[in-house]
Image (cartoon, helix red, strand yellow):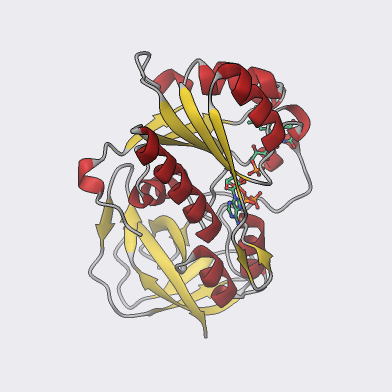
Length: 275
Ligand SMILES: Cc1cc2nc3c(=O)[nH]c(=O)nc-3n(C[C@H](O)[C@H](O)[C@H](O)COP(=O)(O)O)c2cc1C
Ligand SMILES: Nc1ncnc2c1ncn2[C@@H]1O[C@H](COP(=O)(O)OP(=O)(O)OP(=O)(O)O)[C@@H](O)[C@H]1O
C-alpha cells in the first residue's frame, strides 16, 4: 500500500495561488478525504492507475473546512485528521501533490461548470478526474458524476466514477467513522480507516493532549492509546514509545494521558482499544 515516497514530490499547495502557473496536465482526484479511509485509499489507487496509464502525475484536491460545516448542514463534521496528516496519508498512498482549497461561502456558490473551468481546467490542467460514484460538487451540490462527464466531454478530460468500497455496515465514509467514534467503537473506526484513529495535538506538562478545535474524539471513557508519531508540515517523526498509555476522554471533551512524566510538545496518539 505504501508507495516509495522518496522519488515523489510530496508538494502541498494551499489554495490555487500556490499552484505553479506552468503546470503540466495531470490526473485529479477530488473530495474532502478526511481521515483517508479505505474507500478513499481505493479511489486514490484508481487515480494513480490512471496516472500511470496516461504517464501523468496525480494531484489530490481536498476542501477545508468541511463543506457541510461551511454551508451549515446539520451533519457531524468533526475532523478525523488535520490537513497536514491528510496530506501525509495521501502522499504515503502515492499522490504527487495535495491541493487544499479553502472552502468559503463564496466558493460554495460556484456553479458546477464554473468550478470545472476555473479550477479543474484552467488551474489544475485536468486530463482525467477520478471521483467516487456519489461525488457531488458546485452550488447546492448540484453537480454529479454525470455532470462531470458532460463537462469532461466539452473540455477534453476523462472522468472515472469509482464504485464505493463497502464494509459490513455499508459504504465506508468519514461520516460513518465519526459515528463509530461517538459510540466509542474504536474497532469499527479502525476497520473503516484501515488503521487506528489518530490524533495530533500538543501534549502539556500536565498530560493533556490539546487538539485543534473540531477534532473528532471518541465518547467519554477510558482507552488504551499509543504515542505514535507526530506530524509537522512535511514530516512524520517517529516517537520512541512502544508502551500503551491510559487515555481518558473527559465528559467535557478533554483528552488526558495518564503518563508518569509527560514530555511537553507536539504529539500524536493512536487510539487502540476501549479499556
Ligand atoms: C465549487 C463547489 C461548490 C459547492 N457548493 C456546495 C453548496 O452550495 N452546498 C453544499 O451542500 N455543498 C456544496 N459543495 C460540496 C459538495 O456538494 C460536496 O460535499 C464536496 O464536494 C465533497 O464531495 P463528496 O462529499 O460528494 O465526496 C460544493 C463543492 C464545490 C467543489
Ligand atoms: N467508500 C468509498 N469508496 C470509494 N470512494 C469513496 C468512498 N467514500 C467516498 N469516496 C470518494 O472519495 C472522495 C472523497 O470523499 P469524501 O471525503 O468527500 O466523502 P466521505 O468519506 O463520504 O466523507 P463525508 O462522510 O465527510 O461526506 C470523493 O470522490 C468520494 O466520492
